[in-house]
Length: 112
Image: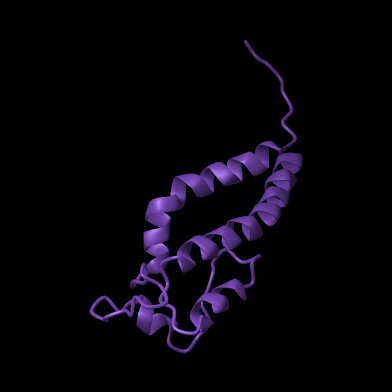
C-alpha cells in the first residue's frame, strides 16, 4: 500500500532555529548563574565576567586572564572566605547538579 504525505521540512527547520535562537540566551544565563555558585570569588571579577558572555553563543565564557588557571586548578587551595563553595571546574559541578533542571527549563520554554 502506498501513502502520500507531505512534511513541511522547511517550516520545521525554521521553528527549530527560532527556538534555538530563543532558548540559547536563556540557557546560557542560567548556566552562568548556577556555575558562579561554585566559581572562586575574591572581588567578583571572575563571576561577573561570565555574565558578560555573548549569551547567543553555544557556549559561555569567563573572560579573565586567570579564569583557565583557576578552572583547571585541581591542586589550588581556594579561599572559602567570599565563596564557601568555590572550587575548580565550577561549570562541571553546576552541570552535574543542574542538568535536569536546565533541560526542564528549556522544555517549559518550548511548550509555552
